[in-house]
Image (tube, rainbow, N blue to C red; front, top):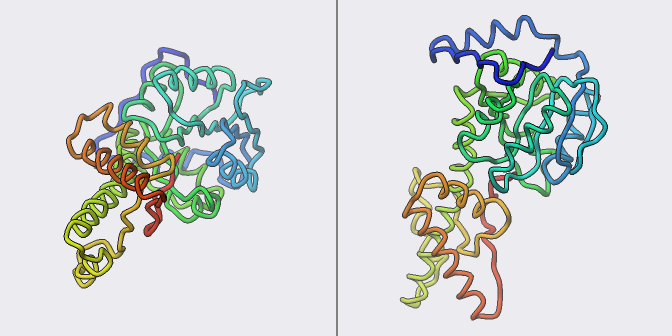
Length: 289
């Protein structure tokens, strides 16, 4: 498993009809899942640490928190788990790839669409995207609960990632491109933001009319195609939903996304005036990372 030379052309992705057949074929030539791999996890925070713990149940794992550690003599898989802040993220990941020479790099971080492809192009390496889902407080358990979606540029890299995650007991699904998983993650967390922003708006209507919010939204409960959750109209807090909306807005200007931000700012202002703070809490927020 050697690193592709920088600048080498990436193989073309197959037409949709050939996708499943292609990755199944590649899986037949991979090493058996029970064979231990050398794995590097870069970023040992709320995402990287539980992933490290899961991976070490089957593989030889090395953790890197901030600075580059001593180079290994290559590794099988490198997981990227530090947050995306700006476009310097790409150069940083490329630097880690050059340092550790992984046969496969998996970007678990939440990133804008196109970032995984840029990393692959600039490094010449095999790179896939696989966003994390789960609540930080119970991240290890939820990593194993949720299906691990993988967006790959080639059938081979997709097959390698599937084998890797399945070796530690994770269920997997392969999507057609890294852009698909990148936008899936961003829109999943933003969907939660949409629901809370609407709850905030309904609460404002209720206050203006002297109506009780809980009574009003109980009217929705028998509607089968509505989400089966009564959303609490609190402030959207945490470091997941609103930062991910900012990532989306940078790529796709949107009045709807701006409306969520404005609604949340208004809620924060009203909460501050009332001398107390509430945070949206009725539904489990999608995980971050």
